[in-house]
Image (cartoon, rainbow, N blue to C red):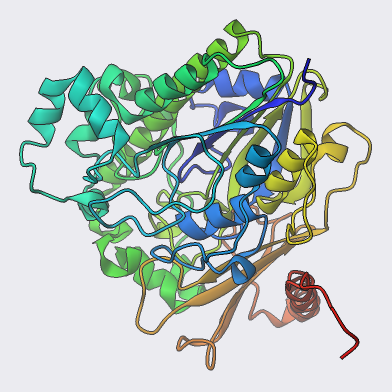
Length: 493
């Protein structure tokens, strides 16, 4: 009998760390995820290594910072030779599968994204619900199960709408509002359940990556889930009068237009429209929660509950109107960089844990590899969270968390590069300048103990000069610590 755990990684796209009932959103309809957290451990301070999809996902799969794995921006393929942890699992005898969005290669084509040596036996790919790739497995399923819905939404076989269509939409596109049974999130759950129920030899554990697209914009959900959300119960966006005046200039530009001017900005919307966007966002999360509940029920019905390591997280957050901004970009607020992280493994982890340690997305690959009995390899920069989860220590992997943005989203002119470090209750964000990029050098400094919403930029306040110097030293040390020094030295010189 195999004692290695099955591993189920459930990943959403663009989900804020404060978006669940168990993380403080009392208006959220997330009973299944709240229960999952109660049955395991909830990490309160998990930071991603980039606020944009592809670079963040590459950090997850390689266990490296973006400056080391080389996928620094959307549209850049993961360089050849970068090892994915799923390949290690496959080599060790795991049956590996991926459902949904992967995004480790450019996806703005009619074809499926090129694959790395990823170890997946099952690869059912769909970049998003509006992506018109010929191999979009969600569309192939929709055409088979709900042909009238597919034909009604996509009547023109020659139209390649892809992601720009969603970027320009305001409160969802037609495919976002289809009945639950035809929705992308439902398809992910259906295929995940099929994978879980696949007969296997008892000595063959499985790894499944179930990738939801929601709650990624364009902010639309089926009516039955929108009706579950009380828009009046959701607080207004977090801001203050004249806030943008004390922030780096790019914040104003991203308030006026999102995605470097390619999508509507916060200032293009009325207050009522922003209120509806926020309601639709939590309706999308409610739908995901419903489908996660179905996956977890199938896991239990298959007899895998006790010895399955379940991880729930997201690749980055969403501004959602806070600080008068929408979507994502070089802003490194917690809105974008802090994500939910829930871990459950009943056979090993005590339930009802709430952990405030600073952890990072690169730590998840190390955690999975240790749980599976696979070697981490010298190139993995993350550290396993199992000692924390097993209560063998109270110390996190490191006292800081770092996020790197290297013109990672839609390109601007001049290009933008930012770096964030959080240390204890302080956060420093540096906006880099020449010779790295053409923007003006600037910074943000936040006292999270007294200003958790990051409203008051202390970077230019001389009363906080000592804290600014301290955090600059922390950032320099973190950047040095994150350099890749794994190449072996074969000779003395």
